[in-house]
Each structure stands twice: as structure tokens, then as C-alpha cells.
Length: 258
Ligand SMILES: NC(=O)c1ccc[n+]([C@@H]2O[C@H](COP(=O)([O-])OP(=O)(O)OC[C@H]3O[C@@H](n4cnc5c(N)ncnc54)[C@H](OP(=O)(O)O)[C@@H]3O)[C@@H](O)[C@H]2O)c1
Image (tube, rainbow, N blue to C red; front, side):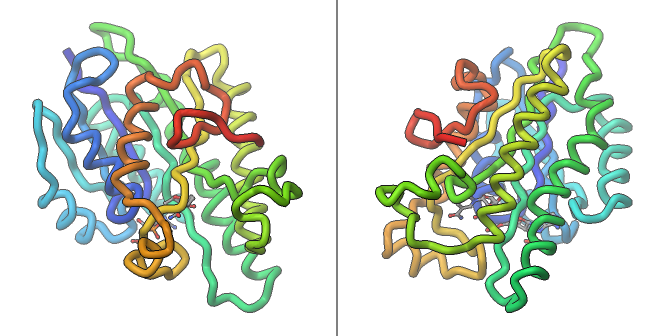
């Protein structure tokens, strides 16, 4: 029986890496087959180095793949590689995302972040659509798209003084993740007749290098270990959150308002 083929963008560090790690430890794919994970990395050598050190179990496998989500050429090359090696894709995880603090001009920051956080996942999803819709001859596979978003993009929470990030500004970042919410809803519509399950996934506040942050400093301030969203995202991949498809699922087992 064919493996479950997963591709993740930004798999070389942070939350993406922990999602990969969680999948490679698993023996609980929704159809009992091992995973083959394509670990997307802008820097291929860095991706290969990271992949080589990951423990694998239960017949799961991993290979690094060069993937810059702002580059149509890079994305198309990744599609060609996945198609040639695996014949199809079963789970696409659009995880790569940024929040650059060092861009002073708000309009330039907005445009830069949109390019990566919104146009990137849109480009990647469109390019992988044909391989995502390809089924193996032996048995139909569950097909999924997961967009890694943020509660900071919740329009419903922005004006709620009780929301824990009410006083954080981050307007361009918030706008990109709000737009990613609409992309999620549009993908839910676009793929509804193809049986592809769509989720937006909010990892919580996580101790990574995101936004140039220091993971250890943020950890002391309350950021969680990236292993937590890694395992929670695996639950989405393994069908444990299927009753919350077309929603933002949080790590706490509930959903978040758009
Ligand atoms: N950390 C948090 O508290 C938090 C909270 C809510 C949501 N999120 C979301 O979670 C996701 C992952 O964040 P993280 O905390 O793991 O951040 P991170 O540690 O900074 O990792 C970001 C990843 O995205 C990759 N990336 C950046 N630009 C890319 C591009 N153009 N093409 C392909 N990959 C690119 C990076 O690759 P390089 O190594 O090459 O730079 C890296 O692998 C993001 O979508 C973020 O918005 C994070």
C-alpha cells in the first residue's frame, strides 16, 4: 500500500520542523500506511542537513526539497519532483510564514508580508492542485490542505479587549493572516467536490525564531514548546479534527473565530 505523501513549506526549522518530526514518529496515519514527508526548505542543503538528523520510525521516510514559496520556478520544480518521485501528493501543509520587524515603511512591510504569507500559500496550492487530486490506483487516499495561520489574524477577536493579544499592533501581519483565512474559505469552496479537507491551524504563541525573536526569551515569557503545535497539527493530518474542517483549529482542541 502506498505511503501517505506529505509536503510542508518551511520544514527546516521552528513549527514546521516539529510537524515533520511528529509525523516521522507516528504509526497512526489515517489509513495505516507510513508517511513520506517532503521537508520544504528555501536552502536545500540546510533542509538536507536537518532531514538527515531526524529520527524516523514505523517505516516513515523524509526527503528535503528546495521550496521558496515566493518563486514560481522553485514551486514548479518542487511539483515536478513530487510528481516524478511519488506520482501524487496527499497532504499539503502551507506552514512557511514571516513577520519582519525590521521594515520601517508600513506599506512595504504589508506588501512583503503579503507576498510570503498570502500569495505564497495561494501559489503553492494552485501549483500542487493536479498532484493533490491524483489518487493511487490501489486505494483512495484522504486528501488535505492545512494552512498554518495565527489568532492575530482573527478579525472577530481584533476588537475584543479580552483577547490576549488585544494590545499587540502588528497590523500588516494581522492583515496577511486574515487574508489567509479568506484563502482557506475559498479553498474549502474550490475543493468541496474533490473531497479535499481544508483546515486553518493556529499553533498558539510558540518559542521559535519567528519575527527575529529569541526562542529562549519568549519561552520565559510564556511561549510554548514547538513540539506542542507539531503534535496538534499531526492530529489534523490524521483526521482527528475532521469535524472542524473549514475552520481555524487551535492547539487546545477548540476552534478560533475568523
Ligand atoms: N511562532 C509563533 O508564535 C507563531 C504564532 C502563530 C502563527 N505562527 C505561524 O507559524 C508558521 C511557522 O512559524 P515559525 O514560528 O515556525 O517561524 P520560523 O521559526 O521563523 O520559521 C519560518 C519558516 O518559514 C520559512 N520561510 C520563510 N520565508 C519563506 C519562503 N519565501 N519560502 C519558503 N519558506 C520560507 C523559513 O525558512 P528559512 O529558514 O529559510 O528562513 C522557516 O523554515 C508561520 O506561518 C507563522 O506565521 C507562528
